[in-house]
Image (cartoon, rainbow, N blue to C red; front, side, top):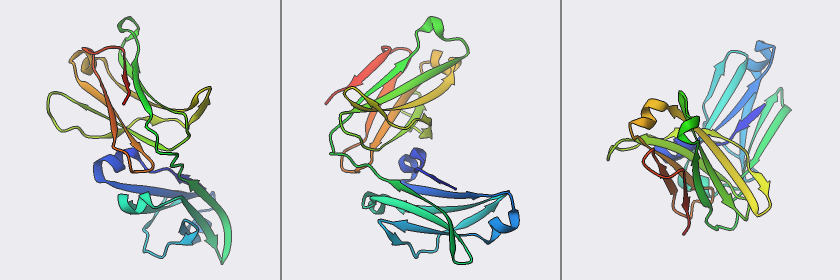
Length: 210
């Protein structure tokens, strides 16, 4: 059983948080009979939440508006069959103390770039809290479209916690001076989004300090 964090892309593009609960099993007949239920802050969600059937798995997707999401402290899902709970998972939303993070974007030196360019967005804070990181790329004043990078769990550091997100693009886009942006959405929802831009014309590391 797997309960996934909301996709940052959905948060930025559609202003909603989508949670996916995935139940997988070898016996398709058993998987088909499983019922998935959701809990928010310990209370069962009674809304009609869509469930889809995939090969050897059953997927339930719960969508929350940002207003609903900001009120959530923990989300859980359970898989039941014949009134018996087979598995359950829970996510705790770490909202922290509301302090602003430091955001840096790092790239490799030009001499180390061959076919692809890898960008690393590092979000650091003395207090542990959830951050939802998405990327965008655009030229000029075109409206950016947000996309997910590869996001890693928080790591404990000497000065607090850090979260990293990796985004890979082509060398051609990099050489054409496309602007790449790392966008950081705090889990509390009270602070504004922080964004850091990087392009070939800019420095190797850009820091955001407010």
